[in-house]
Length: 125
Image (tube, rainbow, N blue to C red; front, side):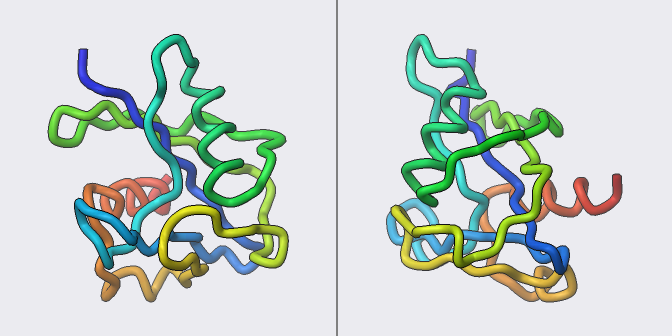
């Protein structure tokens, strides 16, 4: 069974997407969704809550499962934060930066792994 990661799609009231600028390899200097690995014995939902608390200082109240992907042998469980979040409510705990991007700005952004595909799928639904 492949390693499992969880990621969260976060938007603000303007419909912009929150991304993290990676500060470590692989893909240093590229934009990604927030999230991380599922530890042994941990449910994906528990891992998501832990990762978002670590990375954004934010306690998830309600996240909805969106879709599962497999990228380079890694199982990705993608969730959507239903309530919009403003950047003032967040505290960056990992990564070089965080920023909300308008959907039109994503096409020219250096987004890594398969996160561009995931965001595009979400926008089509």
